[in-house]
Length: 268
Ligand code: ATR
Image (cartoon, rainbow, N blue to C red):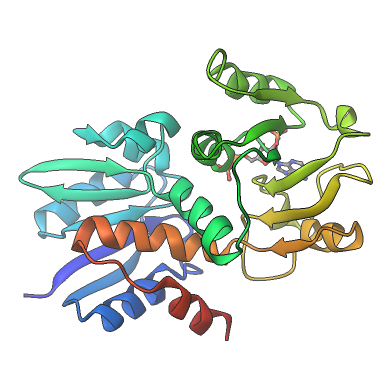
C-alpha cells in the first residue's frame, strides 16, 4: 500500500511541497503520495483527526497552523520545543510526534548550498513573528550572534529575552540600525508578501555579506535592496524550502534525498 502524506495550510494552493516530495520519492524509489490540503481556519485539529483515521503516516504543517500543531503533539523534538512551532508531524503507534525542520533547512541551505560559514558571524534577523522565532535557536546554535529588528519592538524584546544568559542576542528598533554592519541579514518578515521593504538604512552589509529572504518565487524588494547595497550573495528562500522538506522526508522515510538535484530542477 502506498504511504500517504500531505501538507496542511490555509491558503495552500501555491505550495511547492507536493512537487518537492514527489521529486524526492521518485529519486529515492519510495512508494508514497503527498498532497496539499487546505484546512478551514478553525478546522486544523479536525483535519488531523481525519488524516489519522485514514491512516496517513504524517504531514507537514504551514501558515497559520504551526502553533496549533505544536499544541496537538504527544511528543516533541528539541527544535520544535525551542521554537514552540511544529512543521512536521509523524503519526506513529497511535501518537502524534512533532518536529520542526525549518531551522535545519535554513542552516543547510546557507552552509551547504550557498557555501556561507556561519560560525562567529553576526546576523540581523528582520521580524519577530513565527518565521523569525523558528530560526532563532538554530542560528544561535550555529555560533551566530543575532540582532532582532522589528517595528513592534516589544515582540523583538520578548524573543531576545528567551536567550538571556545563553547567547548574544539583542532587540533593535529599525532606527537603531544606522551605522551597524552585519555578515548576514535574514528577512523573516512578511513584508515581501505585500511587496514592501522593511525600513533599513544604507551601509548594512559587511564585505562578503549574505542577504537572505525567506520568501521564494520572485525577486523581493529586500533582495533588490541588498543587491543595490552591494551584498556579496543574495538568496531567496527556495533552498530553505527544499532543505526543510528533505529533513521531514528523512524523518518519515529514513532516506536522505539529493536536495541539490531537486533545487536545480525547481530553479529551471
Ligand atoms: P510569520 O509567522 O510569517 O512570521 P507574523 O507572525 O504575522 O508572520 O509576523 C510577521 C512579521 O513581519 C512581524 O515581525 C511584522 O512586524 P511587526 O510585528 O512589527 O508588525 C513583520 N512585518 C510585516 N510587514 C512588514 C513591513 N512592511 N516592514 C517590516 N516588518 C514587517
